[in-house]
Image (cartoon, rainbow, N blue to C red):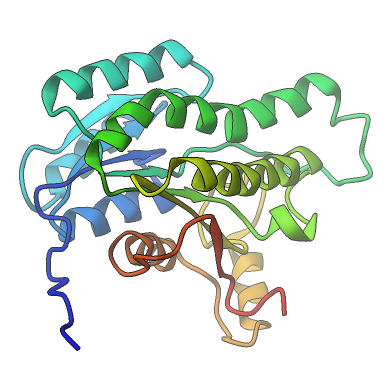
Length: 253
């Protein structure tokens, strides 16, 4: 059986990564660039980080874009600019998000305003970006959207209740969109357990590493693990859509 040449499988393709200036997003940007993609690095507050990352990437024509999750006008502006520049988007990776640590029984601090804020940042903003970029994704004819979800979506155990609900919403959107937008666009989500980053304020990275050591694979998930899973979704899992790829080292077994 003929095996496709997957070296620089994304050469000539345009990839958009939200939350691309730091952590999982930055690792994903680097991995996509290695595969030949021209990457749009979406950021919220990390303009300097995004520019430094852009300058470090192999290849040319990478760019940065200010894409706050709670700003639909910015999402529409990004789509308009990309439409003018190249006319299609081949890969969209939804990495951007926000959370804070609140015990699940602390309903005093998890009030309705904060719940809605976390839901908007993680699920509403992700939907808005997918919605605005959908014409450009469909124009590609073989686009892939990968959303970074979490095992919190199906375990109900995470940094706070709203974050768990938001990630569950991302998983459900993945199912719904995959059903109606194939074959032009595939939708997948990757679901890590705690990742060795500073994403959760107040969470010790040492605690993350200790939890990782107790898993069947004996180590914590790192950003590069998630990035490689994203690339695999795009380049190798060619008949997968509407599904969840769990990359937790066996933590949920």
